[in-house]
Length: 273
Length: 311
Image 1 (cartoon, rainbow over the protein chains, first blue to last red):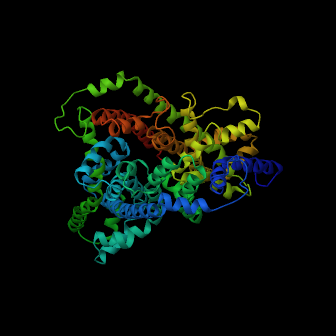
Image 2 (cartoon, helix red, strand yellow):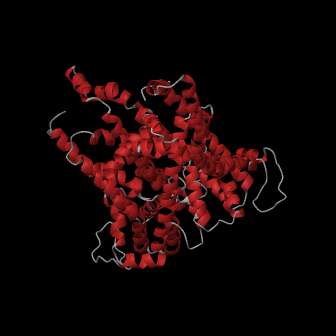
Image 3 (cartoon, rainbow over the protein chains, first blue to last red):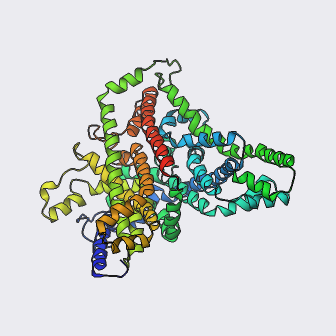
C-alpha cells in the first residue's frame, strides 16, 4: 500500500492510456479547428497546415465577443444577487427561534423537488406580459429565484456550525443582527460562498434552455444560444464551427485551470454538506 | 438548545430581558429572508402552481377563451404512444447514465486515490468535461457520431467495420449514443465526490484489515464501500435528477428524433409548448415529470435523514 510498486506503475500506465482515450473528443475539437475549411482529410490525422484563421472568422461571424459580454453580465449579476440573498436568508432561518423559521426553510426546500419545466410556460407568459422578452433581465431573475433553494441549503449547513458566541459578543458591543451578519458570520462561511459562486456561476454560464426561450432570434444572446444558432447556419463547415465552440468554452476552462484545486475541494465539501 | 444555553451563559441579565432581546432579534430576522423569498416565489412557486392549473385547461397562450377541460390532458398523455416512449426514454436514460457514471466515477476515484505520480493531472483531465458548456460538448459528439465521422473511422481502422453505423440517425442507437455523451460529461463529477468520500476512510483501518489477511476485494466490500455510502447517495441523487430533466444534449444533437426515438419528457414539454402552442398539454407533461423528480427527492431525503445521523 505504502510504496510505489510495480503494480502501481502498471496502474499508472493504464490510467494514462484511459485518460488519453477520454480526451479523444477534445483532440478532435482542437485538431479540426486548426485546419482550413478546404482541408478534407480525416479528422483523426493531425492537421498539417495549422491556421488560426477560423478563430478570427468565427469570432466575427458568430458574434462571440458580444455573446461573452452578455454571458458575463448575466452570470455576474445572478451570482452576486444569489450570494447576497441566499446568505441573508440562511442567516435569518438559522438564527431565528420563532416558529416561522423551520417553515421558511422547508418552504425553500420544496424548490429542490420541483423541476424548472413545471413553471416554464406560465413564467414565459408572465415575462412576455411584462415586456421583458429579448432582454437579459428575465435570465437574471430566473437564475436568482431558481437557485435559492440549493444556495440557502448550503449556507444553512455551514452557518449551523458557527458558534453563536461571537454574535452575542458583537451584540453586547451594540451590533444589530445585520451588522453581526456582515462582520462576523459572513466572513466565517467563506468556503460556502466559494462553492455557491462556483456552482451557480457554472450553472448560469452553461444554461441553454432559458436563453433559448427568452433570447432566440434577438441577435443578443448568451454563449450557448449564440453557438447553437451559429452551428445551425454553418453546419457543413466544421472547422469554422469548432473554432466557435472552442471560443465559447474557453472562458470557463481557463478559470477552471486557475482554481482547479480549490474548486475540486470546495465541490466535494459543498456537495457532502 | 445550545443556543439558549450559550445565551444564558454569556449574558448576565435577568431571564426576562434575555427573552425580550431574543424575540426582538427573531422579530427582525424575518426581514432577512425577504430578498430571497420574492424572486423564489415569483420564479418557482407561483409559476409552478400556475403550471398545475394550466394542465387542467386547453390554454394555448393566445386564445383568451380557454376552457377548463378537467383531466383531458392527462387522458391524452396516457393514450399517446409518443408520450409513453418519452417516459421510457427518460427513465432509461436516467438510470443507465446514473449507474454508469457512478461505476466509472467510483473506479476512477479508487485508482486515483492511490499514490500515482500523475494523480492530480488525471483528476483534472477527468473533471474537465464538467466545465465545458453542454452545448459545445453535444456538438462535438454530434460530429464524432456522423456516418463518416471519427468514431466510425476508428472502428474501421481497428477492423470493426461491421459495428460502424449512423449512431444518431438510427432509432435503435440514438438514445444510447446520447447516454454516452452524458456519461462522458459527468463521470468526473462522480469521481470528485467519491474521492472526497475516500478521504474519510482511515488508512489504519485498511492496513489493519490487510494484516488480518483481507484481500483487495474483501477490503473494498467490507471496509471502504460502507464508508462511501453517503457519497454514493449524493451521486445517485445528482445523476438521476439530471437524467430525469435532460434537455440540452438531446435538443442539440437530435431534437428528439429520428422518429421521436430520443424524446425525453423535457423535450416533449418544450416542443408541445413552443412549437405546437399546446400550453395545457405541455403543462400536464411537466406535472408528470415533477412527480418523478419529487418522488425521487422525497425517497432520497428520508433515506439521508435516516442514514445520515453522523452528519
